[in-house]
Length: 86
Ligand SMILES: [Zn+2]
Image (cartoon, rainbow, N blue to C red):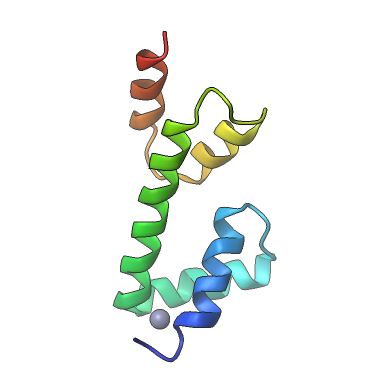
């Protein structure tokens, strides 16, 4: 447990919601690059979102998929998911 985790985790959620201030985003990016714990946590969060998103693909509101996918570093999963639903 790190002392920084609470604030940074909050920023992570804002970032993943696509609702973060530019200033906080830079702060978060810098922190993730320098803090191994938070970097790992952030990676886990992104993975979880990808899972939840793929499981609720059909019912996701318009724009949600592309918004989440835009946050993900790789495009590969999107192709795979679309294939399963065709
Ligand atoms: Zn940290």
